Length: 158
Image 1 (cartoon, rainbow, N blue to C red):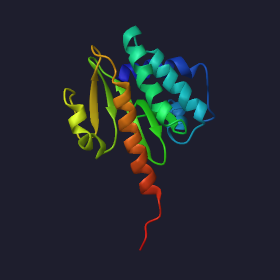
Image 2 (cartoon, one colour):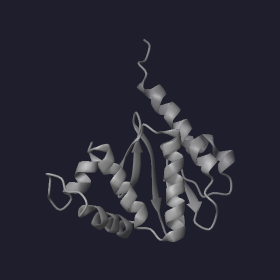
Image 3 (cartoon, one colour):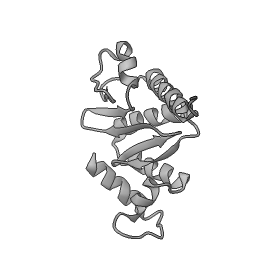
Image 4 (cartoon, rainbow, N blue to C red):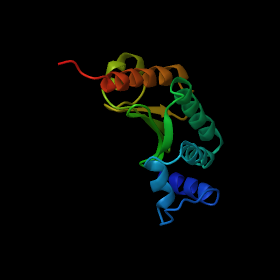
């Protein structure tokens, strides 16, 4: 994962420079409120750095998230693609045998019966590279997190 992030960094560093030109200036800028298109370019680079089959699957996960959360801001966080919509929405990253989809609790637990057959933790689902990406399930999990994020943003009654 770190190697993939470094490869992505080299792909986008020549395409875009920021005024904060320290060794990590580009990533710092997109990770902390940089322009939306800067974050999207970084995610593009992350996906492009992956091999053929993995690249296609990463794009499927990205497309699923973007379809249900078109207003979400893309960036790189913890070296992997990250989506922010009224709070932390989702992350995904490529590993040797799977794509990790990370969604804050309690979403994974609430959908446990639908996730049988996948390795899960309280905030992650491993999507094996040797299986099809369950696009409708990814969308369902992200929608559930969107609803919680929106509910958490509402003013509380006293």
